[in-house]
Amino acid sequence: MTQEDSRHTVQVRDYFDGRVADYDAFYDPPSPFWRAFNRVFRKAVYLRRDQALKVTLDAGCQTMLDVGCGSGQNTVYFVRHGVAHVLGIDIAPEMIRLAEQLAERAGVRQQCDFVHADFLRMSAEQKSDSVVACGVFDYVERPDEFLAHMARFANRVIYGSFPGWTLIRSPLRKIRYALRGCPTHFYRRREIIALFAKAGFGRTEILPVPSGHLAWAIREV
Ligand SMILES: C[S@@+](CC[C@H](N)C(=O)[O-])C[C@H]1O[C@@H](n2cnc3c(N)ncnc32)[C@H](O)[C@@H]1O
Image (cartoon, rainbow, N blue to C red; front, side, top):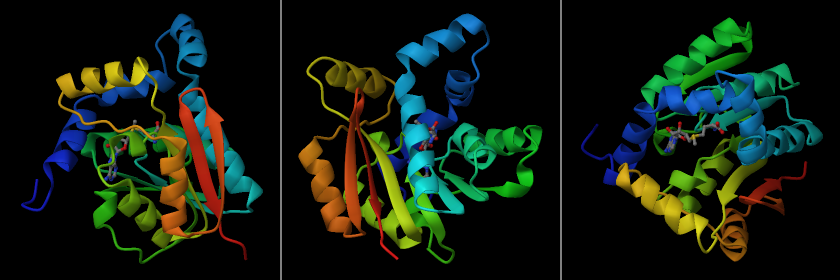
């Protein structure tokens, strides 16, 4: 932790760093029962990933930046399904270690690079066609800054998943995570519209899903 790391940043990093195995098991469950369970009850994770891939490929993107890539499950999926190169960034060092191993095992190491960093501190020296953040805005303190920063790295597409407010599930989730020391955030549709309007990147679309919204903007070329 450096002096400038906010308490929020440290909480999110430590939360995910300590739960790498649990998180990875969402995607790679130990038994067929849990695989089927996840497909039904955690389908938001697959929906947000599949839509990110669709938007990216439909826009003709070749390269992608996977912000908050976690254990690299999506990163590997993206290159296996048609993206030429993906750079994964995550603030949790253990997540990056696992992501590198996964890409190696999957035989796609040449098409993936991984960086351990707080995305907000990276400078946009190299751009990608598509910049996606799946399951990340849940843990972002300043979503407007975060989306604007994504736009700096993107040639063509910015994309994010945004958990929605629900009367019972959201407060319960907030409490559950808070008890483990991790802040969480939820978004109303009008807030997402305002975020993308402020980013001013391009034509914006918002897709309601059971867990909230998926939203993206495409810059016309
Ligand atoms: C719920 S996981 C999602 C992982 C993956 N994108 C997926 O959909 O499976 C959220 C990830 O975002 C990362 N993260 C949160 N804030 C970040 C930041 N400022 N910079 C880089 N990574 C961040 C966390 O460490 C965590 O691994």
